[in-house]
Image 1 (cartoon, rainbow, N blue to C red):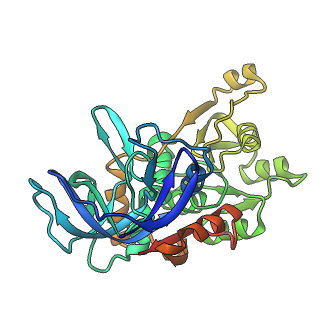
Image 2: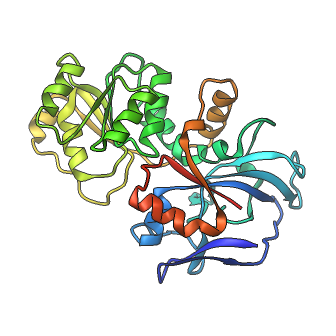
Length: 333
């Protein structure tokens, strides 16, 4: 079968033929129908992210995957060939969280083998392309909003970075009743997209009147919650300065750099908080699938383009260059 393989030692990525995997006891082989291309995949290829638990030097990328059950392994019950599924992006093993497409082979392939416990059923009319992006592009902002950020209705919320995560963050914040939702992005196209997805205000972080515009949008009280979906140091400084009393900054984007609080006394006096966030929990993907099937969410606008699996390297290059300002590119075997 074809698979997009990364050698993490050399940084070499190529789509090539590899053997079809065989599921062991408790595992299931899934025929991949769609797989999302994430900025994390770009970072893995660039070497900015390194697998912590990978055995060997090579891994098939892809942690956003939907498909159909192809072959249940021994001892697997409740799943049959042809069942439509979306896959959780990882699982816990002996107290360690393993991520698909990072610590073990992922879904940039024709088939992928995963533990039966990560399968989430899909209804017959659920688009594979839309389902594939839920584990990460949607579940990560969802978890950051409801679990880490604990956003409540009528709270003023800022979203920095309206890309693959932030665009969904805006949509999800609208659903939970955040108000106002203030999107911040230097790209005019991203700001327009934020408004289309449900933001009340869209600001350019480089504008001379940014602080005044933020104050006006929040009636002078500042933000209750700010989300950094960009992973940029300047974003964090600006977001911290935009927080109001007891405001909390949620770090979703990854930078690897130190966080600086310029005035720690004022930070403490106003009881602000910085909260780290990563990924999502097992119950978040089923929640999002249910919300979508009930018509509360629609990710049709999120699929910027689909490409054949053999063009995975081109998809990575397009995302890295932000060509066309994509939300999500999806690979189809």
